[in-house]
Picture 1 (tube, rainbow, N blue to C red):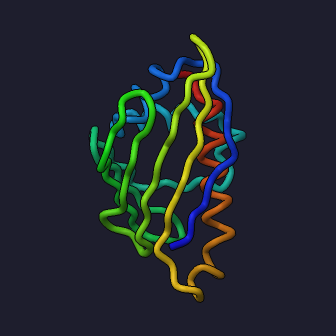
Picture 2 (cartoon, one colour; picture 1 turned 180 degrees about the vertical axis):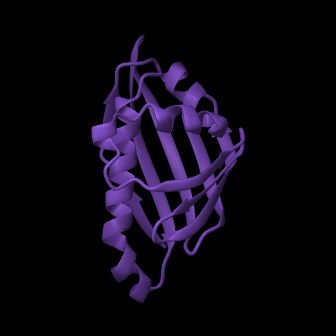
Length: 141
């Protein structure tokens, strides 16, 4: 198991506002549509389908990835796991209040990788986790 963590990102919205958006995966379409054009570089999400508990998309060059929420800890954490993916992943979005109208987030991924796969995907996966954390920190909640 390989653990990858983003850096901590500060968000100028309350913990409750951020949790409400990220815990309902049907909001992902809303969030993706609000990513500034200059921040979309390298993001290629095709066939994005979202429900409150699942998200499915085609990610180039990986293929189809489907994630489902497996646990919600209100206002603190959303935990997801892959249902369909070339790599088995567990993914957390942790949210901590830093004030009435601010919070910080950190993303964590546990990937089930053998040594060969770890060498191939560790860097792109680390970059993807960090980029996702950056995007989440810039969105209007």
